[in-house]
Length: 244
Ligand code: SF4
Image (cartoon, rainbow, N blue to C red; front, side, top):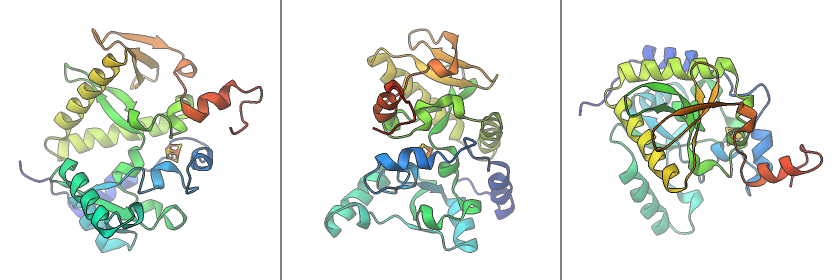
């Protein structure tokens, strides 16, 4: 398949139009205390390895010193293990993307964050009929990401920008719609096995649970969506803001 090739102006416009924070508060302060290294999980390159489209890579390398190729050296004990890890993850990464690492949260240049940083922990959920319904999340981070356990805090502006950005990406980057449709199907299979409903922040502004059997949607209060890991325990404490 032909690799997508966005011009620097198109990348700049995409970044500028998808810049809203997920929540009104700094969610990194909520999750970082639970990460051994003290960084927000999504800014820890050993937990969530960022990927950049090649056109983003070209753009950021010309405009900032924030990004490097991911070498895994800081996430493994030996150079051999690092090489193995890079090979393993490269295999799972689409041809049009690169594994990357950045200077870290204390030196982040927000204007040059990649799309994967901006979208985390969400991906565009697409049903089996090909309808882009809204936002669901990368479920492998349920135990780590505070936002996943607190979906009520996601702002309307963030959701609007997220969906507009992905509509643009789907127009400009061939194959991405199908990739996310496939990823949505993988989520349906995984949740079906666990007998769980899929949580969805629908583009109509409401929250839903989606049955994995027939894809029927049931509207629910967003506050009723499940919490996980330490955030579940914290919510059960008499003073829910306490850390566990
Ligand atoms: S998006 Fe999730 S993992 Fe990233 S800083 Fe916010 S709470 Fe932490």
